[in-house]
Image (cartoon, rainbow, N blue to C red; front, side):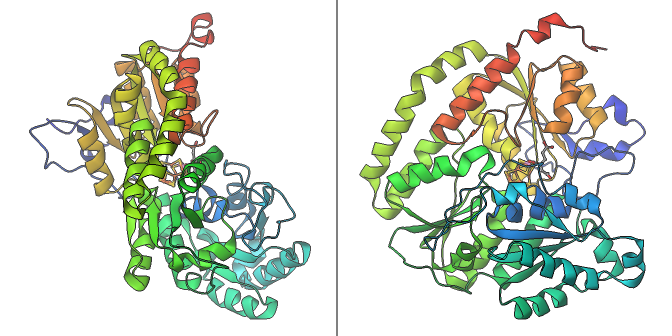
Length: 468
Ligand code: CFM
Ligand code: HCA
């Protein structure tokens, strides 16, 4: 029986198709995914605005004004909720005057009832002009439309076009109303398309080399990008553009000059790599740097591609060497602990094999908020027989899973973390991390430490938790 209906879902039998128990003789059975959440479910998903701006992509860019055209609630969601730090250096040798501008500042039109009735474009123009006056050094202004402004039909593209001419800098429209899709995933797609259509190919880099790469789909969560940058530059590669962790506006505009694109998050950013390949002939490779083994493999692959084999070995030796012994110790301590991974999507398949192979953990369930079929195929291929795979799980399924399977640890987001804690189950954040970065050699060690510390925290023995 590859599909399973949870007890709690008796009244929502459609959920059965979204929950799959890995069964080796049943490889063809598909999991229902990338569809609207079934009414009756308390989904853990976000919206297109979250996917395009708040969670990832434009929110990570360091030198732009990110203006959300909405009532103020949507705007809250785009600031202070994310950990994608940025450094002030810009590619033109200048320094951006405000450190971590993308994390500290949020801009919005704060629409009120009258704007909904009579239209919000006047207010949008005023907000663009005002924010540009306050922060004239911002390289560009990115405007996101939302459910409200999508419904009232404000022509954000036209306003942005007019403002680009008036201000003499890029004012870019991102049409991300929540109803444009079923989850964050649609926001990724819209944002990839808008960056490609509006920006890529509009500027030239100050210099190019034979080793230029773009790191696509890497958002610098808790410093992840800086770890990868260190490895890649030490082996002789030049990061021409980042899409979009710690990125500047200008580098998005010259992504077409890359020699090879690396796609790190393959759910949110393969779109733009495909478009760049199609129009400019720049090839791309899908890469994975979570864990020591994937890091070794991918650095070697890049070494072969660019004729930098020896340089790659030096980097591997140095950084893998630094964590090897400690990771062994953590593996001894953690072996056999049962884990449930619930991420937006890709992290559930990136991490399942490394956590088992390199830390001895036992993955009993993997889930995703918004993966598509290709992602579920990877999840299926990377877990053992009997593992539960869930698409867009609701909160009650999560509780049922906790109570019946009694995992020793949950890797999930902020919403699920405290639900797990309520039941006395250790949980760490795999979205924003606890003490990251989590990527690369040192990142994987950080993850091991956080897992160990959470599982062994004295609090689990000191309190009574809800266990029924
Ligand atoms: Fe890619 Fe990401 Fe993820 Fe993602 Fe996200 Fe994220 Fe995620 Mo939260 S881009 S799909 S939309 S790896 S914000 S950094 S952690 S759900 S698994
Ligand atoms: C998002 C962002 C999020 C939320 C994470 C969480 C992130 O989807 O809008 O629930 O902890 O990674 O910050 O995925």
